Length: 333
Ligand code: TRP
Image (cartoon, rainbow, N blue to C red; front, side, top):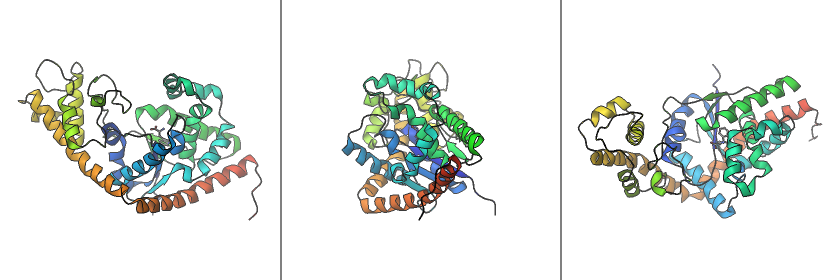
């Protein structure tokens, strides 16, 4: 039998996830887990690189685990675990740090951006973020990593680190490939459609959270910024309408052309309420399922415990190879 390829992905438990996260990542995981040996992680150690309220972080870890499951991650098919439950991630980061350089890490776009937005807390972890991410990926001999455009640079660095280590110490790591799903939609702000939709937008009407109830979803779409002509077509000079068409076609699994046709003789008001309905219809069952799961903490704990156990077995195999290659003496059992 042909061996299946390994897929690894992680999301930070940093609070709200938007419909953009869903359409760009979460939605695809359900299908991907049938084709790959899939490993999904709650990247809690990454989240510590910006200041967190400990109680809120604890809650967000469960929220994200429940959301993964509600979006169709099946713990019988995939491994779902919390990053900090597998200490190999922190351990490999230490080793990889010894072959990474401040120059290459301080050049990362995300580091530069976060240094600006968190001026009062430019900590070592923030700079080391991509090395921890490389550890996540390389521990599992990952073949493919589904990533959004904003993480491409980090994935590129992971590949460089793998190649560098292999050249210096001998082959240990598989060099991973990025994977940008064909169906990944780029979702823009509902209020300023030239900007990417962001959960940290101060204007709540600019994004759709996976926690929004149907009324909120519909209201936000009603308030979405459009333009003054009245044609529902996808076009560069109509960023608002184009964004709504993108969202609609993504949630309904239709092409943009089909969506354009469907709304050919439709007014903006009607169009917006149809988009709102369609999005609410996708989000609401997930939200309900997530809340149901959150009410059964024992089940979530069980899934995460089992996931950590399975992840650990794979991760430690790689970590011990690394320790051996660099010359650390194995602990006798
Ligand atoms: N940095 C990723 C993000 O913010 C999350 C992440 C952490 C990740 N470790 C990863 C993604 C490993 C892919 C692979 O989106």
